Amino acid sequence: MAGVFPARTLTILAPLPPERIARRYAIAVASGALAIVLRWLLDPVLGHVAFYITLYVTVTFCAVVCGYGPAIVSGVLGFLGIFYWFVDPRHSLSLIHQPEVHAIVGCILVCGVLIALGEANRRKELRLNETVVAVRNEARERRRAEEELRQAHDRLEQHVQERTAELSQALSRLESEIRVREGKEEQLRSLSLHLMTLQDEERRRIARELHDTAGQTLAAMKMSIALIRATDGAKPELARLVDDLNALTDEALQEVRTTSYLLHPPLLDEAGIASAARWFVEGFARRSGIQVDCDIPEKMERPPRDCELVLFRVLQESLTNVHRHSGASAARVRLHRDTNAFELEIGDNGKGISEERLRRFNAAVGNAGVGISGMRERVRELGGRLEIHSVKSGTTICVALPAMRPESTPPRVSFSA
Image 1 (cartoon, helix red, strand yellow):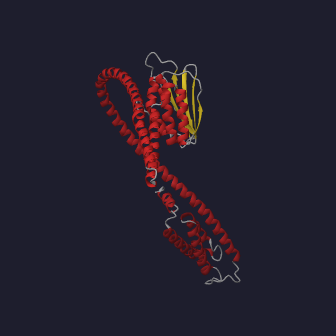
Image 2 (cartoon, one colour; image 1 turned 90 degrees about the vertical axis):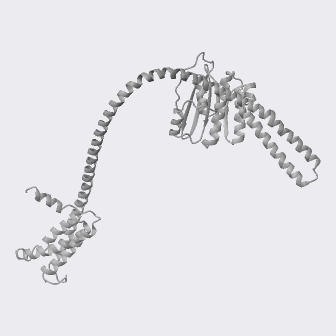
Image 3 (cartoon, one colour; image 1 turned 30 degrees about the vertical axis):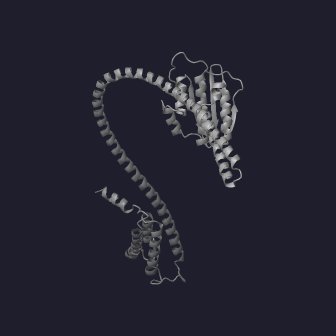
């Protein structure tokens, strides 16, 4: 029983939440009435002194439990009731010639201090209650999580035992499969390089066909248009149509020539990577409007044919990506040879590549095609490396190919970004 009364006392003095407005102000009105009733009960003992002692108790209670608003209401009601019924002249609220003015002022000051202290204590109790509730919820969640973890651990142990038995049976099969796959991977790498070589040969053939067939056909069309213009030059309507047709033919002829050169530029075979790269960079800057700083020496030893082709494809794909995706206003291209390798560097001042996309790119392997992923596989086959560095101020692609072809298939190298 000794522990029951303190617990009940704490429950009575527990602050009510702010959202319980009706209950708080109902308690305030009841507390004001209680102050008057208690003063009436104590009037035979107190007489004409300590008029507001019961008011101090109820105001303090309201400030702690209900807040400063209800405490003010309780104080005003209790003060008016006590002043009306117990302060001489009784049954009057007149302050004229009131001898208890100092007591009234003291009551107001004391009530104000009690309300302020009670409100501060109430806010502290509310924060403490919120903290206690949060701690209890956290403890409950932790116990639940621990129980779930224990159950998951038991299930995991059982699953591990089952899987161990299965894995022991599969291990012998995997060992034999690994030996087979190692041989197949080497064959696939050789096949991948062979397919990309065939792809470049097909590009060369298509470029030649475009130049020799479609280009010649369009040139013949221009000659026919010139004859039509000379024959029917007197008809303005026909002349305009002929001019439009001539312009479209020029545009198509230019597109065919550009496509043919982009598929496989003749300069790459005739003059080497340095001349072909300068030609492509100049054309790219003219078509895209992006300023490109080209650092390629006039005279440079030519790398092997397959190295030249890989370097050109990386340059082609990189500048295309700069134009399509980076939003850059300027780019730079640097090609040089050091003691042991040919190095190509392409950079821009664009928006860069997101970390997630760059991580997915670096994780991809074996992607054929003319894109950077396909070039990365061929760079690796030639014993070189391809690195991508990207920040918010731009992206840089670096390719290094050995000056001398390795005698055997090079080991796989890691790519960093």
